[in-house]
Length: 129
Image 1 (cartoon, rainbow, N blue to C red):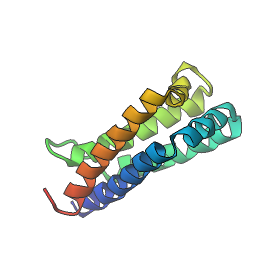
Image 2: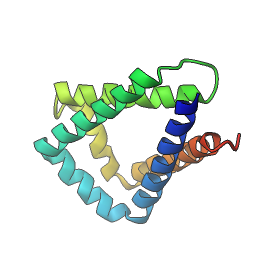
Image 3: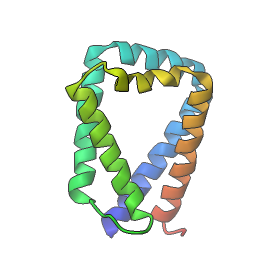
Image 4: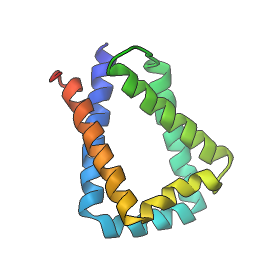
C-alpha cells in the first residue's frame, strides 16, 4: 500500500503542475504540441518513455480494488496501452488525439481534468482522504 501512496503523490503533483502549466502557457503549448506530433523522433521517444513508465506502474501496482488505488492502476494501463499503440502504429488516427490539444477549448478541458484528478490523487496520496 505504501507504493500506492507514493504513486498517488507522484501522479497527483505531476498532473497538477502539468494542468496549470498548460493553462498558463496555452498558446505556447499549442505550437509545441504541433511540433512534437509532426516529429517522428519525438513521437518515438515519447512512446518508449510512456511505455516504460506505464509498464513500471503495471508491474508494481496492478491493483484492481474498489477505491482510489485503482485510479493509479488505470493511469498506468492507459499510459502503457496508448504509448504502445503509438509505438507500433506511429502517426495513426489514434495519435491524432495529441493534435486535438491544438484546439483551445479541448486544451482547457484536458488541463482542468488533469488538475482535478491531480488534486484528488495528491490528497489521497498525502493522507487527506
